[in-house]
Image 1 (cartoon, rainbow, N blue to C red):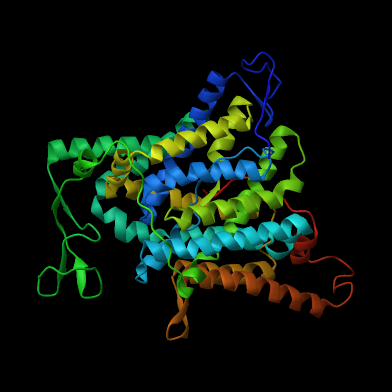
Image 2: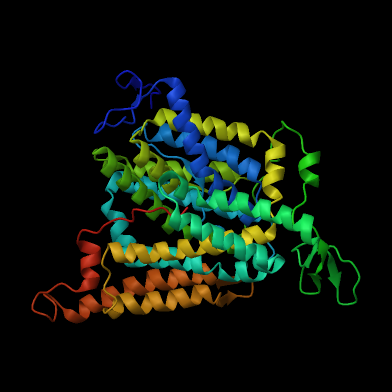
Amino acid sequence: MSIGWKLHGDGRTPPPGEVVRPDERLSWPRTAGIGAQHVVAMFGATFVFPVVMGLDPNLSIMMSGVATILFLLIVGGRVPSYLGTSASFVGAVAAIRAAGGDSATVTGAILVAGVVLVAVGLVVHFLGGQVIHRVFPPVVTGAVVMLIGFNLAPVVATVYWPQDQWTALLTLCFAVLCTVLLRGFWARIAILLALVFGFALSWALDATAGKITSVLPGQNLLDASGKPCPSEGPYCVATAFPHERLSFGTVDAADWFGFPDLHAPDFTTSAILLALPPVIALVAENTGHVKAVAAMTGENLDPVLGRALTADGVGTALATAVGGSPTTTYAENIGVMAATRIYSTAAYYVAALVAVLFGLCPKFGALVAATPGGVLGGITVVLYGMIGLLGAKIWVENRIDFGDPVNLVPVAAGIILAIGNVTLDITDDFPLQGIALGTIAVLVGYHVLNIATRRARGPGGAGGGVIAPAEREIDGPVRPPTTDTD
């Protein structure tokens, strides 16, 4: 766990064909420059997702820096990575809040998920990475990632988009154009560029078209008789009223320096059950990240896969213990490494320290919290859809055969249960809903059907010893996902 780097060459940009390895660095000014690129790369998603989840963006940014430092120490500096805010929990958080949970309930549930990920990491460390593919084969992992993303569609349709549909549409179009037309580093910060565009557009529309009349969740709460009421619920709903798209009142009032507001977690069984399925997505994300870094550096990192999972679990548990958001390894930062051929962990320490400094600036957090709902509407259409389709990418990379009903049936059932937010009431106060119910249907359904199919075929199988597709996915080599779902 030592923190020390050898100077690569003369400390300047590496010559063609050479790379700066994790235990090396360039000169400190150049290392700081690379660290700044990592900050920009992770910045958009790391503070957008806390806003979407209703958590403090200042605290989330600061704790992402702390979690990154812990990650680098736990993996012994062998896996360069930034731990930004995870998108995998957004659907679970939306469900928890819809059931009446507050931020303490949300962070308590995710903290438990972080502890579970720590346990998974320890199992992988002692038993080897193959245990992941046996319990969570690609067909299951892909399905869970997909249902997490697509379960969020109603959030876009009912919360963000109605606040300002035209700003949402234009922001969406801008984000799509940036992602498709830009190249390299600029393409990887397309969401950040779309956010800046949305801010500018909202300001311009306020100046030229005046206020917009729409519903803001949690504001202008009226009961059936039209009287103000204290909290949103079945008999107390938010109603449309004229308001500015972009308001800097809270930004002006915020201090330049100060500590974020911390809060203790609260633990509720129903909320915890909703937060457990995303652990599968975190396992896939971290595995893919480690494999991608190994491919780029030419080093076998399988021995540290368990430590990487454990480190992310520790980061998630620590961040949420004080009110922050969950963490995960970031694909955006893999892009920076691929473009620069610099894998030095020194640059990640720089990025982490910059993130901590951002977190100590309340004015920055107030600016993030001022993001107009219409802007979030356009951005979340892209982000949530991409999360869902990353599940399909896992299937494609691993050549999943959906001609086999063992693969097709549980996946089909689980995805519909999750997208439809179907509820199964186990008892009066213990429901399984949406993501949790869909994940259980996929995971249990797949393994039960696979066992039943093996027994029905008997020794050697019905096909003269040919291994069925479902068996190949468990026992044969599989390609881990190579793209994170952050």
